[in-house]
Image 1: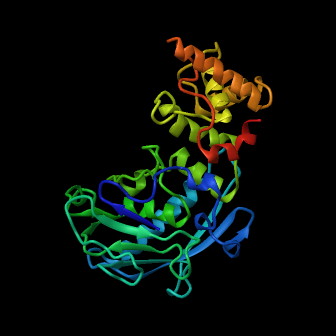
Image 2: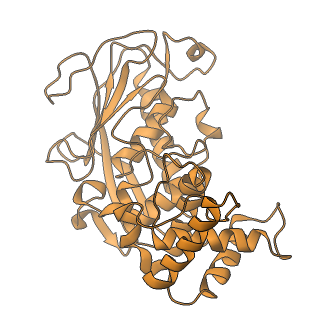
Length: 325
């Protein structure tokens, strides 16, 4: 279950990580909702409305927000995921129940009321949560909700469309992202619905969740979450052999004549994969030797392309080491 507040769309440790770790039951919908290969059909229904907005505007905004996910969820480098969303005739027929409520409202996660900053705006239950709450989206009706972007610039009014699109991501099983451009980044933005664009990070999260692992999305994740911190000794006191090879491949490619700063992510991905493949199969012995050389250079005050890269890192990256073999 995720809760969202005005400055930080809050929840457990942010990151494009949960889909990577175990693809747990909490991250995707049950097979009965699939009508084809990677083809998901879901129905939504608003059981309790806010008085802040006309019902017709609310329903229209919800339809557009779901269609945004349906139209933008795919990336040309990845297998296609198809979403079919439609409004149900009743709460009983719906897979995703949407409602507004105040305080305690029957789900053990009461709302905290309206406040200028840092209060909970909404919460969403993952698809694998126990029925009937799985996938449901709840908004705090103590807040004042707006679809008028101009009116929502004040802290006492909340811009419904952006929060809604973010919460739908949670309803599809996505956790928070660390990439600022991602819709699943846990910070509130006043971006008009017709200007919201799913980031490659969001698309990879969907694809990893509903299709499976891929080199391309692992590359995207490493580039957005690991590379920016790989020289920070506090955060990267140890690194896996996969990460060592990846960082070495990245530095090797960026130092090659083929690289230019304006390279597309796809071109850089192919370049790094080529460099990594030339290292040969990932082996613990070869990577340990590489890490020892890097460590000795650091100990002697010499720069190393691996930064603080040694051994280990996080268990979930080791699980997918085969992707770079």
